Amino acid sequence: MKPIVYILIATALGVVLSGQDYAFACAVCGVDNEPGFLWSMGFLISMPFAIATVTGGYFVYNSRRAKREPANKGIFSE
Image (cartoon, rainbow, N blue to C red):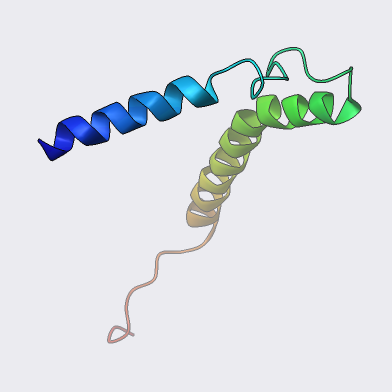
């Protein structure tokens, strides 16, 4: 019986919060052409490319460094 009560409470809360009074700004339009919205969208759009570039650069750097340096023979070998 308790799960039904929780579902009803969550549904009622969702209906109340999805009313027109709480949704005053559109995530796509922004609010009155604020420049902060454009900066945040630019940051979010560029972030996957930045992450891919840093990750790829790390692997390229390690690959080139491994080819340049001789292999370590270990602690006990001379």
